[in-house]
Amino acid sequence: MRNYVFLFIFIFSPIIIASGMVGGHHGKMEIDKIEDSFKEKNIKTISKNIEDELTEKLSNWQTAVGTYYNPMDSSQTKKNPDGIGASGRKISKGSIAFAFGPSFTKQFIRDTHVFLEIKNCNVITPYGKGIFRVDDLKNIRFNDDNTFYIDFNYQDINSVQKEQGVFLIEFKIKKITKSTNI
Image 1 (cartoon, rainbow, N blue to C red):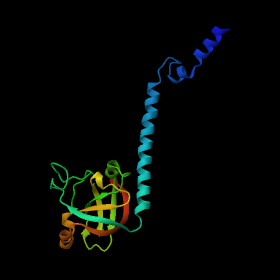
Image 2 (tube, rainbow, N blue to C red):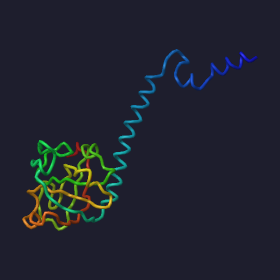
Image 3 (cartoon, rainbow, N blue to C red):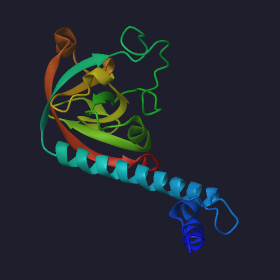
């Protein structure tokens, strides 16, 4: 009787069944498919959640600390600058660098176009009066949920702001689109 109990436990053991040894295959292919499917869905869910959170958080006017930078100056940006921001796009008129907080990722900014409207801004960009596209991210040390930081392309600010160096502005999110849309 003891041998039959042992045999029964051995044959129907969850460890043996889960490992894929029952049925003559190891189950590796099925596990890989499940993991790949989970990763793909998880990335889409994270992006959508960040987009919703960002839209909700920034749909009303917010105050930000504004500064400016030259994307080709290695003392102000990365070593060996090429003028390309975290979005993979060239920094040009209407481009800004933004610190969204720790939940915002480089992958999200590469997959989307985030446009911000700056209150009382007379700068005409390719996106409209006072409308800027986030093409770069500020250094991680500026990722704070309680304070927003925006770096403007040095060509997009006036002489008074350049003289001040650091200035306060009000902004809100104008729209978020997928990269293929623009």
